[in-house]
Length: 216
Image (cartoon, rainbow, N blue to C red; front, side, top):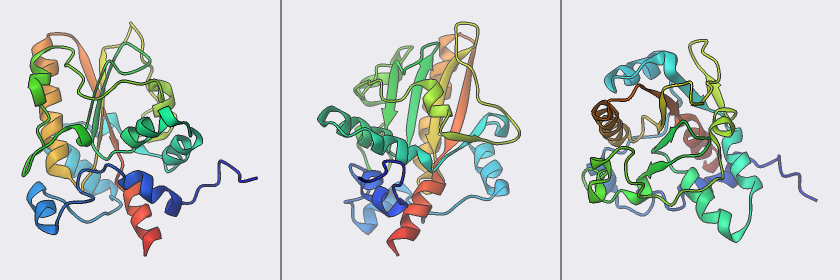
């Protein structure tokens, strides 16, 4: 019997790229949306990109490679779409004070070239935003952060009524322009809300870079 904890990065490549908006696009389309090569970030580059997004390194995390292994543990008809959604490279999850998201944005649900339309159907016109992605309970706030590596000496955050309204942005360098644009929508939406808030940034360049290495 196969050990469910022993998935190689090669076995995760298809999951990572299934439904990935750019996987079936032409080279020209990839260039138009700002697609770059996969690369594991150095600390210096990580900090520089966060500054470009107006984000703090003190709120930065790195996705653990066990993230995909965790998604692979679930294998039901209902979980397949959920896994595919959670494996996408660009995401914003509005947790608020809840254990599960109350609004969710991912690249699969944001059409458009050269820029993804994150504000489809004026989703960011309200607070919390209207979720274009079907919500699920595959990953709670604590489960998600249990699959991350804290940077800058920070610790795994708590999320409760005693904490500010919380949003998590999953981003990367290889589609940085689109990551940056999503972050801008989120920041403006939170500023307009008038509520105390915080944004955590989880970078996932490493799992895509490792998956690409396994393909070679």
